[in-house]
Image 1 (cartoon, rainbow, N blue to C red):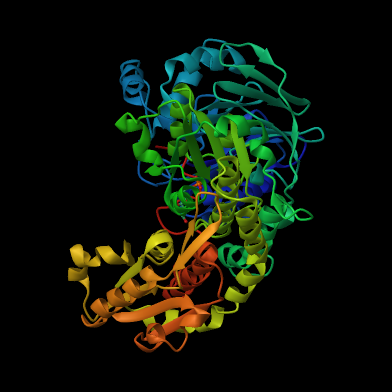
Image 2 (cartoon, rainbow, N blue to C red):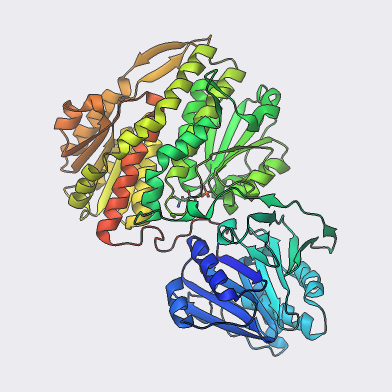
Length: 627
Ligand code: M6R
C-alpha cells in the first residue's frame, strides 16, 4: 500500500512529485524517493524515513527535465532502508511499485543465473530487471509491458520510465489502485486522485489488467493483451481545499470536527425532506431483488467492520433479516455459504481495501447480489459492486477513521430503514419517525463536540495508565471495539473492547488498579416493532445490567470513566464512576454515533499527550491495498 505518482509534461517535476507524495503519504511512510529524467539520464533521490528527509536531501535542486516518478513506501519485501526505497533503477529502466510480486523469488533465481546483480531485497527491483532485459533487446517500453506482464504473479501497480523514451510513462494496474490524470499538455499517473487533484480533475480510473501510456499530449489505455480501449474520463468534484488541515493541528482533529457537516451531507443527500422519506437512489434498481433477500452478509475491515456490527443491529431490527458480519481477511478463506437470496454488503471508506475487495469479488463470482457503502467515488469497490451507496463525508486523510465511520453508521441506518419498508417490517410511520430522528443528528453531534475540553482533561489524567478496557452492551458493544481501536492505533496503548456481559467469562482477570475502564452506558432502550412494523415497546433492561458490570469492575480497583446520556448525570452511573461524560440525549438507535465522538476525542488527546504522530501512526497506512 505504497503511494506512487508519475508526471510527464512541461514543468520541473520535483514540486509536482513531492506535493503528490505528501498527499499519498497516508499510504505508507517508511521511505520515499523520486526520479527525474534529465537530458536522457535519470537521477534518483531516495531517503529512509518520512518525506521531509527526502525534501531535505533534494534541497533547492531544480531540474530541467519534465518527466519523473515518485514513491512513498510501506515496506513489504525488504526493510525500510534507502537501498530498498523506490524508485528502483536497473539499466535504462526506472520503476516505482505498489503491491506484491508473489513469484519474485523464481525470477530472482533466473536473474542471478544470468549474472545480474541485485542490489536490494525488494520484489520491485526484480521487475525492473525484467523490463530492462526487454528494452535491452530493443523492445519499446510498450512492448516490454506486454511481454513482462504475463510473467508476473501477484497484485501490483507500477509506473515505469525508460531513459530511451523520454516523454513517456507507463502505469500498469493489476490488483492495486492506479489512475491517470489528463492536464493541459501534461499527464499524470497516481495511486489516488488526491495526489494530483491540485493539477487536474480529469481522471481515468484503470481497471485490473490495464495500462496507461502517458505522454505530454495525452493518455492512451490498453488491456494487458494489447487491445486499445476508449476509457471514460471522469470529472472529480472534491476540491484540493478539502484536503487541507484548515487551521487544525491534525487532519484527525479536523475530521472529528467536520462530522456534523459530513453527516448533514450524507443524510440530506439521501432524504427527501419535503416528504420526510429516505430515498436511496443507489438501490432504486435493486428494490425488487431486495424483496427476495433472506440473509445479509456484511464484510469489511477495521473501523468499517465496526460500522457493520452496528448495521447488523439496525438491519435485523428494522428489516427482520438475519445478518452476519465478517472480517474481509477471513471471509473468502472459509468457503462462506453464499446461498441465493444472500445480499453481500461491503463497507469501505477508501473502496480500495484489498481484503474487502476480494470478498466482494468472491460474492460476485458466486452470483449473489452485492451492495457497497463507500466514501470514495469511483473507487474499485464502488465500481465493481452491483449497487453503491455513497457516504458523502469528503476526503478522509487521517489514518484513524472518524467521519468515515459515523457517516457509514448513518448510511447503514438509512439502508436498514429502507430495507424495513421494502420488507414491510417497518411501517411508514415508524420509518418517518426514525428519519426525523436522523435529521436531528448533526445538531446533536455538534453538541457532543463541545465536550472536547472536558475530555482533554480526562485524557491528560488517564494517559499514563497502560491498559484501557472499553465495555458496552448491545448496540454499544461495537463502539467499545471502535473506541479501543482508535486508542490503540494512534496512542500505541493496549486497549480492548468487550461486550460488558462477557467480562466475567475471563477478561475481568486483567483488571487491577492500573486499568482504565471505559463504560458506554447511555440509556439503551430496546425498541421492538410489532407485526405491522409499528413501535411496540420500550424497555431498559440492558442499562441496568451495565450498571452491575460497572460495579464488578469498580470492586476490582479499576479507574472508571463512564460515558452516558444527559439523563444519567447525577445517577449511579455518574456517582459510582471516577469520571463521567454525558453525550446529548437521543434515541437508542443514534447513540452509537454520538458515543463515537468522545471515543475519538479521547484517543486523539491521549495520543497528543503522548507525542505520537496522530495522522500517521507507526506501522499503519490509511488504505490497505495488500492482503
Ligand atoms: O478504507 P476502508 O474503510 O476499507 O479501511 C478499512 C480499515 O483499514 C480502516 O477502517 C482502519 O481500520 C482504520 N485505520 C481505523 O481507524
